[in-house]
Image 1 (cartoon, helix red, strand yellow):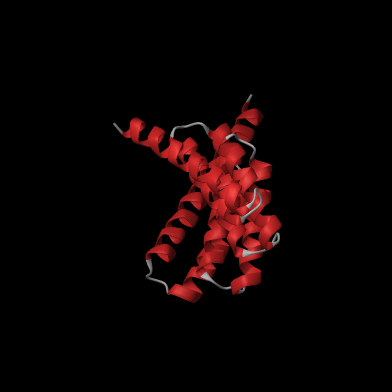
Image 2 (image 1 turned 60 degrees about the vertical axis):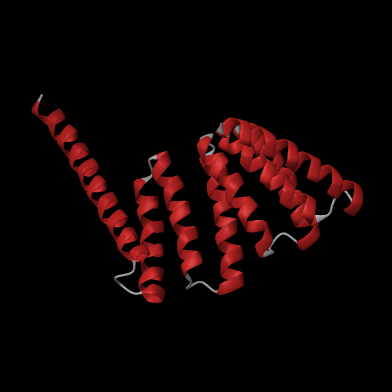
Length: 188
């Protein structure tokens, strides 16, 4: 049933995109909004390459309409970065999430919960790639911002603290394993 609803929704969104392109012009940002919806349906259906194509075109249209540092480009950039991360293109994902963070800093300042969320996204990608030290650095930055803006007991703060502690434990275990394996070399 769900699959059928997505197919029908896809048809409707594609039809809407054609109407918007005809009435408003191919480069109107309204077209971009519809393309994001189509991309999201592709993503839901696990067609990340199809989603990427629609997100990329939507980003191009939004940047042409609003500029490269406008807040309206951020949601599409985050979607593209998530796909890059899923495809294990970690450097590209970090690059995009860093750009999102920088846009947010320009919009709301460096000490804001949305900037903290951007640090967490960057930390997530570092964690996925196995770079625990860089992940912990980004999570620590998020934690600091959350504590300053939301307080020490807010859910975002406590969950970030738990992640920082978990990564700290993993880093400690990794260092211990390395020391143990080096130590075993001397016993031979």
